[in-house]
Length: 324
Image 1 (cartoon, rainbow, N blue to C red):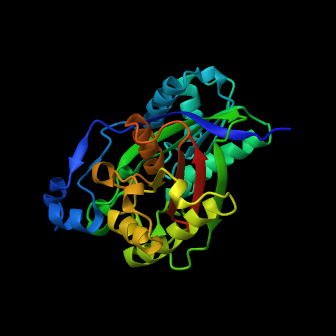
Image 2: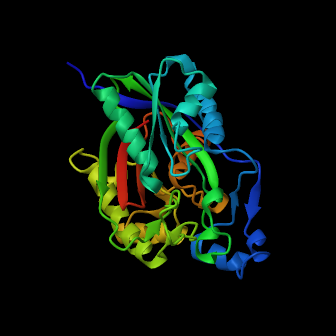
């Protein structure tokens, strides 16, 4: 008998060709570059000028397939974590499947907000470990610019567009070693984005509210507590410690938030990879985009241990301990 693991064999990411610096928001909101940078760590983000979530995901998938050295026909499964799908039907994963020609795969979306990629990677790993599939394309990405209220300073400056992808394949060598997922009812609705408003001939009052609704104070309290808890759970019982981990890739929500969480856990901040300054918060896209960057930059290599940790609306959270 031998253990079965899901092992990452390729990654890729894609962002729109339209960087939007903080200076832009000075022209439409009562804010400035310094205010945004000092409170969030964000300097720029990318906004789509026509590409939708499936378009960004398709390009990220193509890069990941090339990196893995496999063809789309070898994929058995595609799972896409997104809260900004192209449409309610079909799933964005199915659109990517069509675009890349993955004729032998089944495909579906996962909705877990900023924890989405962690949830999707965990689901893919379980399909592999139970022997149902061998090779999976896991995607996370958003076009959040279509969901923003550009009159709301508290949210408009925080989010951006982008997608990342990873190829997970069955292996006898350690890959994903341990996973942890959690959720809790968001009693205060501190993170909320409506789908289609309830409108029919029998509704008297129309709901005109739009955009992402966020209680920053509550989100900060939840996130700074749950990051450390989730990371501990990913290591629990494995025999590994933080000293064994080469790099930690967190959801890129806010640099101040992440720095505060690292101080609480007394983990060297150098272990945390941050790129929120360039991309802002792309929700389901932050972790796979960062994962691809650290591999491209050779900040991690084959054999290294890494931790991924996500947290977001739901409330949801999760983590993975991975041997590359």
